[in-house]
Image (cartoon, rainbow, N blue to C red; front, side, top):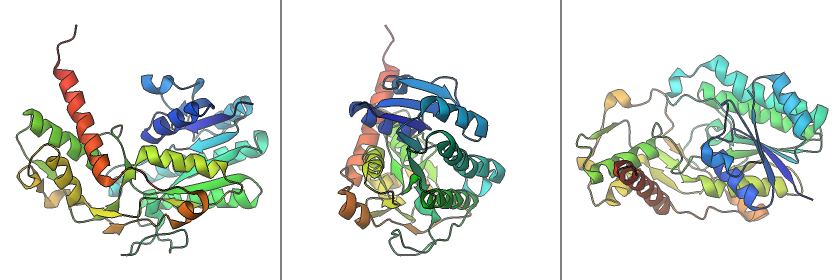
Length: 321
């Protein structure tokens, strides 16, 4: 019998890789998002698409009553890149209220379904140690606080008998991430310098913070493994390797044969008011229990992103037939 999956936030980076993965494994994949239509490449693997605001309890309940999926993946979230400027009310409505709406709808209409909730490594108390599932909690901004509250809702649902699990995702990237995020921004700048269409240095903030950065496609594998497990548990999903943001710049510009120091500047006014100096995960538990580990190296990921930007720039410059 064909399994079915419902992905909230299917138009995002993670939704694309997860949906494509599940469809390739024989799932009937339904997507949900706030836009009227799915992205064109997302539509290619969807059996159905539903416009649904996750913060609307009635809309979520109607969707689950109608679709009754075997697996539910909540990848929808609200985040402002400028950490200190987030709309707290909106964040709570989506990041916390949305999860509550899914759980309540599961209890009423799909109690046998399995729920994956995308949590975040930012829920942990900042420290210079790798973070595992037992590390001290200490969300430092409104976004992280809202995600921690959602995390707790999932744990409560599990105690109430639902199959509900948090995937504690550390930073992950892909060519699908928009250039408002640091790694895609740097990859695009490197490609633009190489193509001769950019000459001014790219202004950035502090390049010293260390991050654990993986490939979103690998992390989609971890999400599915968590839903295939015998029991629901929370897992850190990370590479276990940290890189200062400076490494992102150095590697990206090295891909096009350039010295990042001539192409990037660190501007004090762009340094975030709230920042975590070190955020690296310890994926030992998911490796031991589910056999997952990141397959794409940092160097491979940066190369993938720079090459994707180069291809897009080249395609844009070619005359349309």
